[in-house]
Image (tube, rainbow, N blue to C red; front, side):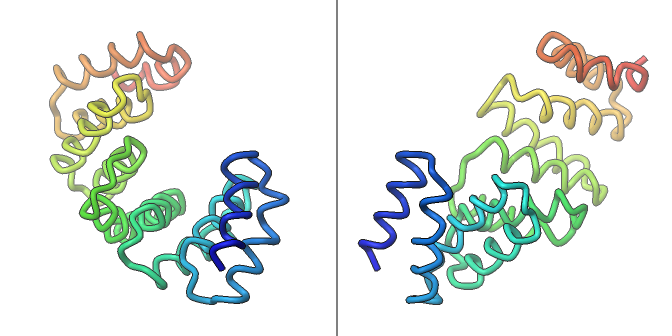
Length: 180
């Protein structure tokens, strides 16, 4: 099993060849249906191929096999946010964070989920964490600015929006009307 996963990882990570890695990962889960790392890798491949339904299935399976696998918890939570299942996404996102995951994407999506369930102050904290990890993360900055608007904090919303405009002109143009 280790040799199979090693070969799959060689193709996937070292060579970036998902097509060559996938049959080895399929073999790994066939031989060991509890191989959470193989399910996770298959989810990453499916997501990169824009097959979100399959990716969701694989990330869910990885989490079912190992609830302590932070990467799978994170990706499952992100997929749930993408599906607008915000309340449901909070569990996996929170679990990933509690497992020590430090990723600006995690914090951004966590902020997005929280904002969409009306927990604006908590959302601010997560957007700020995302920006601390990656200060030029335009989508997180936009989320923070919009959340400040929801909190009726126009000065902070304006400050964050101006920073966004310096970082990403096209995103700025898209949302300019909301900040005037």
